[in-house]
Image (cartoon, rainbow, N blue to C red; front, side, top):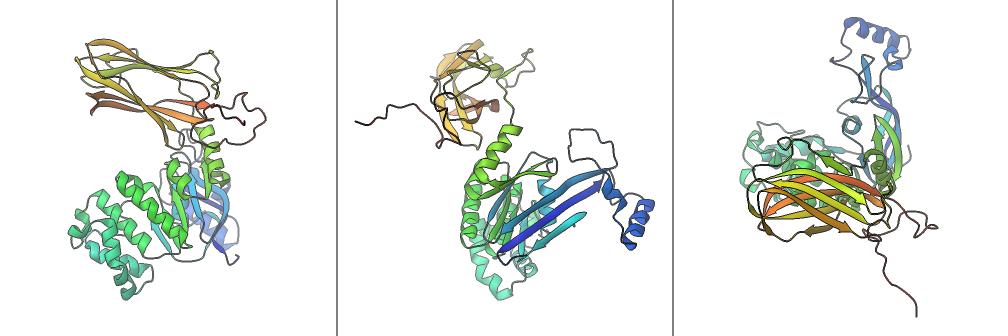
Length: 417
């Protein structure tokens, strides 16, 4: 392992017995023990199904992760992405030494601080103050070193009022605030953070991302798992894409994210509900249907396509209502937000139409979020990821290879005189 490497993962796999703790039976344990004492391979590592939660198992064993190899250099920031059940959390537990791999080896250089789930490493009976010193001691820091960071941790977490209260009385948000403050400020060489930050509010998530960027800037290594592609894009130089427990791709973050989204995100250009009672909504409005059409009636949406979005809804109680539509990129960036005029809508069927001109959007994957708003201020009902669609490269730049920069791609008159 070279001097500049922080983590080396070689052919790592983790196998579990479905529905059981351990191997499940004494006979299986004895067979494993007998094979290992003779220097033979574990007989149950030759079997097992892949980690696909949507399929019915035809074996008693499943591989949570399998044959994963990668290196992380000191000071690198690695984002791990993939669908739920892809093996991300299992891999982090292996890196954090919470569990050991069934196959392969993991070599780590430096102290690790892990934030895998709410309350990780905290004793619920101890106060916030005691838990800060306990976690610092586990990391190998002296009492003096921890004390020098104490005020900074408490201020970052924003729990001054409750610092001498047992943490079992903390909310999940307070737990995460203090846990992240401890993990980030006690100067581990490697910081491992799971999706647990999603428990915090938007202001705290932004604060955490800023702190992680600062930590990375001081030469420490970060492993970050998130479903927020914008956060991964902002923080991480490299990304690892996991699918069904195996590594599909590792490389430059923007390239890996685009490949992940193009494989995992499916076009949903029309939704409808036949029965008004089943339609999403409440006692004021119900969403009946949403549809995206291309003006040229082609199935392929390119950067040149004129797009029409149609929203059909039912008003159950007359009220001043306007529609607010957000178009978001694959990484979660809001490309634009448009609203209709607030009008008194009578009870009955209504339709909203939005026309998106061609030569405006970049080649990317987009999602549409919709809100029904009362008097332009109070949200009546909202629907996230209502429609999703991909805009592909058209004929405008047939000789262009690669991703065109920018959130949008308007065709403007730019000429030399």
